[in-house]
Length: 99
Image 1 (tube, rainbow, N blue to C red):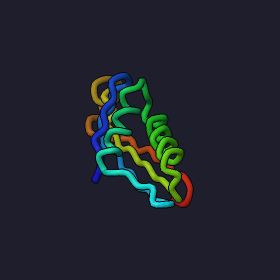
Image 2 (tube, one colour):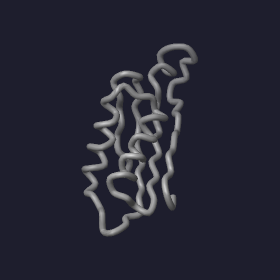
Image 3 (spheres, rainbow, N blue to C red):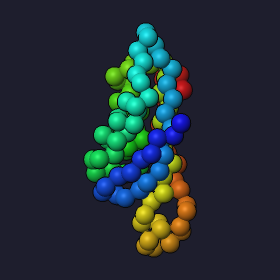
Image 4 (cartoon, one colour):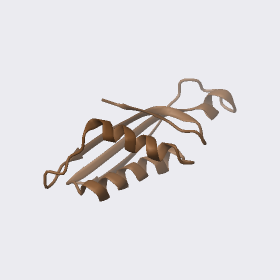
């Protein structure tokens, strides 16, 4: 289930896809993923850093066998200024451990 993502500084809106392989029975509930993504998205961010920040946080806190974070986002600067490429999305990914 993709999580909705929106930022306030460099305005982009999209979805976050998160996967992890638990280790040592360290798991979290689905709602925590949305909270984690939202927490990092509230900071001044670019999409690449947001992707890596979420992956690094999950990797450090859960110590899983592997973590994957993929963000698909539509950037408002692409829609409203410059290229005016409405509907175009950018995908970033961060993989840690076995993933």
